[in-house]
Image 1 (tube, rainbow, N blue to C red):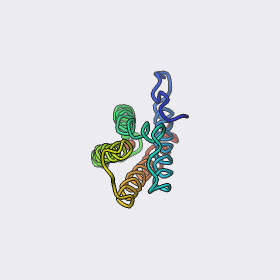
Image 2 (image 1 turned 30 degrees about the vertical axis):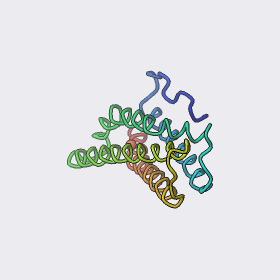
Image 3 (image 1 turned 90 degrees about the vertical axis):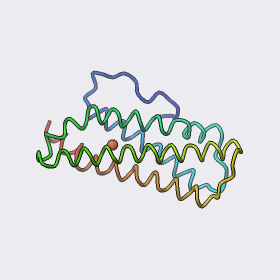
Image 4 (image 1 turned 45 degrees about the vertical axis):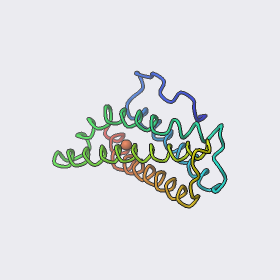
Length: 155
Ligand SMILES: [Fe+2]
């Protein structure tokens, strides 16, 4: 899927686990783009491509996280012990908010750098980019392994 394409078409008939897996794949695509950008530093972001990623990063993440919190978290009672549900929900929501805030920071840096508003040290930008996509990949892997897979088996 092209970056910038509509990520969230209305597919209300689509099962929640399918939609969540699809959204995970979208975030992983963005992670790949961020990694590619980090690998090419200190080259400046490509205006037509990386600017689109930067502009959409926070909003995309917020929409994906909102879908998960609305459709995914209520299903956790099916695969977790009752005493673990609250802790799990709290942890996932905390990670969502942290990732969103971090994504906003990265997007701001990329935008300022790309339009020449401010020059950043490439090592610092690389560190930020890698921190963000590492966090996102780790979060998605945990949701996949500990929640999506068990929920798929429970269906
Ligand atoms: Fe999540």
